[in-house]
Length: 300
Image 1 (cartoon, one colour):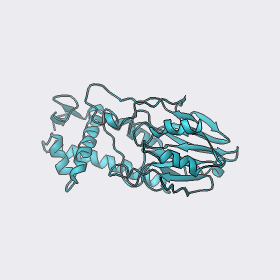
Image 2: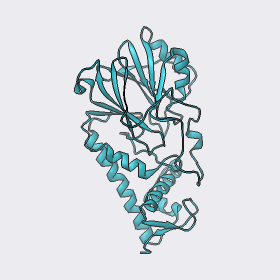
Image 3: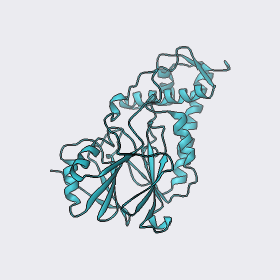
Image 4: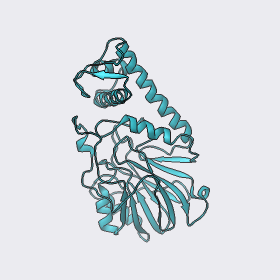
């Protein structure tokens, strides 16, 4: 039997960290409980035997009416089915799992929850209400195709500032690490577009799906944009020096990297190269692949 540790992180928000720690999930997936009495749950997490029944038991006396899913990776959405069966709650999300392109291998295929379909499909800027809790869906794809963030806009029709002025950002922005963007499951151009979208948006806090709350949102967004542009500059320098092989780029740009993270670093490099190709800055001899050789589009 799981010992559920529910932490009150604000007047209206509680957090449970799912017991799925790893190098990719940090201490586990953050499952957020919003409201009092009538509840909305964000990202119930992966399938872990006994976890969801224990969570429901820990919330005895309260009613789970709504389940919001930021995206359909297997550490976020699969447990929604069991939670819905136990509670009868309605599920919300941006649609089924998809990929951006079909001309390259999807090495992250197993990370997708291909079974989840939300009861209510949300679109960008859609405003909706869950038991007096007001939300706005904000499209933040890039980490994956159907990634969406949720702004808590009001509580029982009170002013926005009284509703915490919080944005639940899923995996789009994390405080403990940069986000994996791996084509064709992810797309760097979309990811960067949606990072810029959240610049200077005046939220008080970002609640990420992994790690602690981000209490300086503008600073974190700026740091992540700078990080990606630094990675781009490193790749361009490799290409300027005639190094067009992804493996060699990873060796140069990620010195002393843990062996378990070489694959993700290669995927990140591939994603940056896809973005550079989209911007007509880089060309390749074999399309977008790990085997291709890359060079600057102008040859210099």
